[in-house]
Length: 148
Image (cartoon, rainbow, N blue to C red):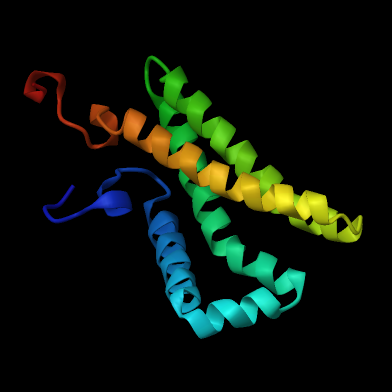
């Protein structure tokens, strides 16, 4: 790891390039949607466009979760805690991604609303678990001798 790398750039994971690209795409999408006029336009647009604007975030969650699950399983011994936590995040992202098209096809506003709630809960779960596992040396945390 080089000096100055923060966040995803500091992770020594096989999918690092895909993570960086998906993070930048998600950031760019969020930056565009941060503008009030763009946010209002998307809110008034078709449900498919609203759903599509969430895909960069969800793709990042899927790529990050898969990378962390794979890295945890490659450890000897397997880091079951990390694999389990991010396996749940991976499945959560898949389910949340599928809920909007299913709700739209079923003409169910309730399913779409649950998807919005699921999206927020997914991010909270992901962030909570990233803080929970960040100190592992294989994820870039300090070696056991360096911890205070």
